[in-house]
Length: 242
Image (cartoon, rainbow, N blue to C red; front, top):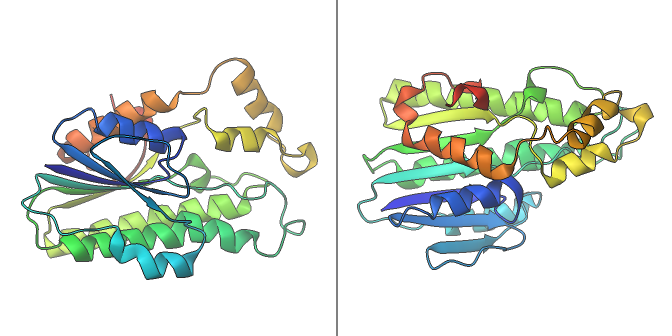
C-alpha cells in the first residue's frame, strides 16, 4: 500500500493531489487542513490549523500512524499562504510570523516527524515541499512570502544532503508549481496597486486564461512521485516534469 500525507487538501492543488492519488486502488491518503471537502473510503482527514504552531506541536503525532509493510510513503507540504500583500513598513506586526509559521515552521515539523516515524521502513520515501519562483527573486509586497519560500528551498536542500550522508532511501524536492488558478491568486489580484507593482500582470494572466489548472499540476506532481529516482535536482520548476 502507498501512503500519502498531504497538507492543504480542502481546495486547490492539495485537493487535486489527494484526488489524483486516490485514483490508485493501492493508495491511502491522509489530508491535513482546517476544512474537509473530500469524501472517500481511503481518505482520512485531520483538522489542523498550520498557523497554530502550539496546536500542531501537540497533535502532529496523530498524523503518522504505524504502517505495515508500506510500498511507498509520501509527504507533500502543499499548504501555503502569501499573507498580506503590502510593503514592509505597512504590514500588521504579526504578518511575517503568520507566513513563516505556515510556509516554513509547519513543513519543517511535518518533515522532522515524518522522517522520525518512518526511518525504519526501507521502502521509497518522498518529501515534496511546494515552493515558488518568488523564493528566487524579490517581488514587492511579498517580502514575507519570498523569504519564506527561499527558506523552504534551503530547508529542502539541507534535508536532502543529510539523507544522502545517511544513505537513506529518501528523496526531497522543493517544487515551484508555476502560476495556478487557486484562491491564492484571487487574493493576489485583490491587492492595492501601490503595494504591489506587478498586479496588472497577474490580473492579465486571469483575463487571458493563462493560469494553470490544479488538476494539471497535480498530474505532474504524481509523475514526480512515480518517477522520483529520475530527478536529481532538489529545487526546480514543474516545467521540468513532462
